[in-house]
Image 1: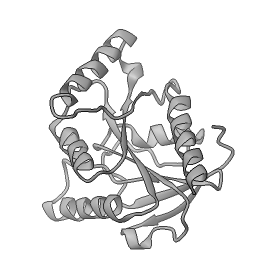
Image 2: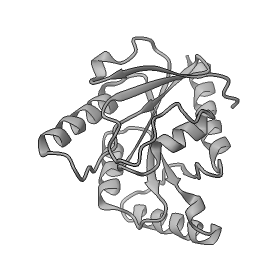
Image 3: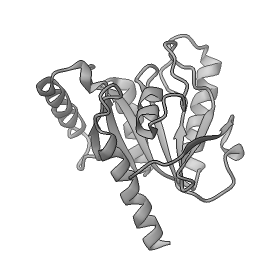
Amino acid sequence: MDIKTAEFSLSAPMVSMCPKDTKPEYAFIGRSNVGKSSLINMLTNNKKLAKTSSTPGKTLLINHFIINKEWYLVDLPGYGYAKRSKKEVDKLDQMIRGYILQREQLVNVFVLVDIRLEPQKIDLEFIEWLGLSSIPFAIVFTKADKLTANKANQSVEAYKNKLLETWEELPPMFLTSAEKKQGRDEVLDYIDRINRELKGNG
């Protein structure tokens, strides 16, 4: 897929305020500081599209970006904040879950995971919740440039083995590096394939 245009559309504090059209939406979510903004900017070839920050938890709204005037890339708030009150965490959690469960235009959730870490409880619980809620999702491993190719592959295999303890079938997985643009074509081709299927069925 060739990305010709990527533009900010709107930020919504709740699902009812999201765009009113029917274009497919692909949501990106992960723990704070997983490299979500960098990945979004790498995918869209626009360094300024999503605000990158060294402070975890900057995204507090549901941010919609319209891509090629055809589909939305949705930047969701991260989960697992270290420095938020319980009230704030619950509010964000409600917003995220409300969007994922209620948004009919949502086609796929990309769950971002830092490849350098062993499987984290918070990620595994979120992945399990998506599965129980019958939400289609894929796993995107970030920061692959921080490991050797061999170590990165070992990390992915370890993750697969962990998931296979509870899952019969594994979701699609992508190995990415925002620095090296690794995985860009694979993720975009996956989105493109789903968009084509939707058009064929629609």
